[in-house]
Picture (spheres, rainbow, N blue to C red):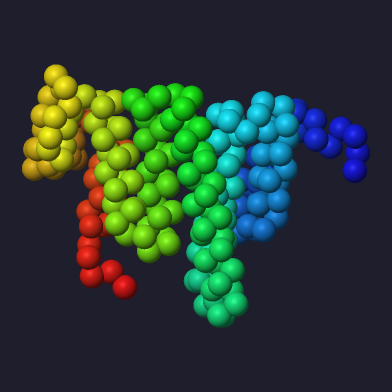
Length: 204
């Protein structure tokens, strides 16, 4: 291996190549480049750095995409076991990434909410529906703290209390073109939908 093959300036290009390969459906190759980027960043900044967390999240998403592609093709028994391991590995990576984001940015941050939301999706894919629901709700609570409203009831200090019904009305107003409703982030509505999906009890 070339002595400069792990130079810090190569981390971003490696990550970009990973994204490019993933968009082409070349998931295994993409994972290789994400892993190399993570290794370089960890060596330079340590394993608790937010830049490491971002690429860990990218790698986890790539593993999930690999599993999804395999299932769409009709996975064999051995492939199904490999997919389960990929999802398990992706969940571990998302857990680590979300912990780094939270430790670095604090709990009142949209980036943290997104990381927690993605972690909930990983639990959902593992059919850990209760844990997924709890994680989705946690992501929602973070977003509530960011925008200063309460959607699912309860107390948020001195912040405004907004019922789920009212939140739904706000979404409809936005669709009708009301300007002020833009203060309610799209991610908050996505998280609400995730909570509803994860709450369905008759899932296979």
